[in-house]
Image 1: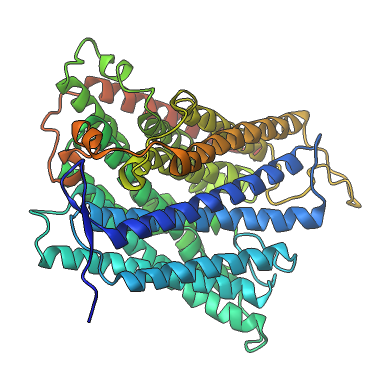
Image 2: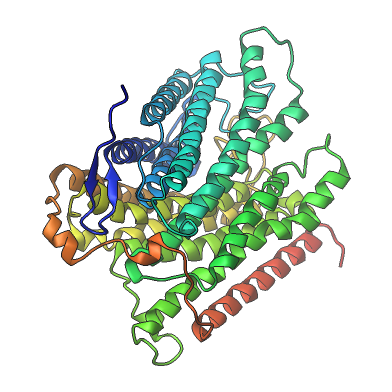
Length: 561
């Protein structure tokens, strides 16, 4: 006989909180933070090695550390956290029990075991193939096996999420359409299924190749299919962190989107088009046709970024509408000046949005333009771009929402509030520096994935301009700053969970954290948003100027003018 689900009543909302859903959110969030710590420290080692004046690690250790850093932060930290988001967006926001919690625990265990196996394989030194693991480089069999186990576990988590939506609908635990945050999580989960399927198609035969059952893997086929997983996994992040932006705006300010229908349509664009952007990794690949490259970059790329641009306008508009409704109507920007910048959840969300758009979004379009890509490909510009999207965009957004999850799910008050309000700014400045200086070094031609830009052990020497060395030094300083912000985040979160004051129910009822805007369908109901229109104009001006600069740079590399 199946055990009846147990619930507690949330003092903030009156919703029923399924104990198993709550436990799974906690477990996934804790493991995620552990991988953020491990991956972040490994990343600091990478940055200090690329800084020629420090050059911390030897070559063999550097490539193992670079591989583990990429996998721990790009896959394990983010996907464990996204599992927590899926369970929150389904069982918690829909007031439902979690479907098949035992199966969700099986998925969690597979993800945990798989991630440990991958780290063991990499840190043994036999699998320094980096995040992409391009063939014919071959890792130890357990490296591929660990990733496959992790992926299957994540797929199980997605299935439990979808099943929970069905349970909530059948048991009528909510009215009308699902909240926008849940809708964004649905999109993320659908992309996740596509991502995991792509990974299975290429990594299962690669595993068989590593144990000698298959004699050869075609390198071009591997790259095309692998990027169906590699880049699509970043689109899961985009959908998830955009959903988190809406969630934070709703919880902190009671903000509703300008038009919920348009925001939902923008989420759907991720499913329809964003996979195409992965082609920017293949533009210098000689085995792929020009037709494929031209379609995926010159045309479809603009559809791929349309969804993010809609969200980039909608969320500031939602914040402005909410602030003006509270009476902050003096001038064009009083609503922005009087925003809760001392609340780390809000400031983290806002910084994440701005940096994702200005640094990650614009540089992504630059990389997706075939002609410009030819001078950027395989330089440090590429990791500079994805640090802006994945670290400044996704990681900072996930850090911000954690400041809401700790009191709401762990039921603990956050410690060190004075230090805490500075954490998003310290981390954001560090990550912005990493992104900008790596993109600057890449523009000067500094290769990515290289242990030593001085080529000290090479037969033939090559001298980068002095500015490239300056960029790498500033990148190292920025990495130290970002690591400091990351350490503060982890100390505060872990310290709050272990030693934070228990959040009493009476206090929660008096100051509830979840507002109806986070749990229901609805729009702001106004288009009087002059401040947002000006901010959007600033963004497009920056976009056009940076685009022009890069085309000008291209014309000077190839004397076309």
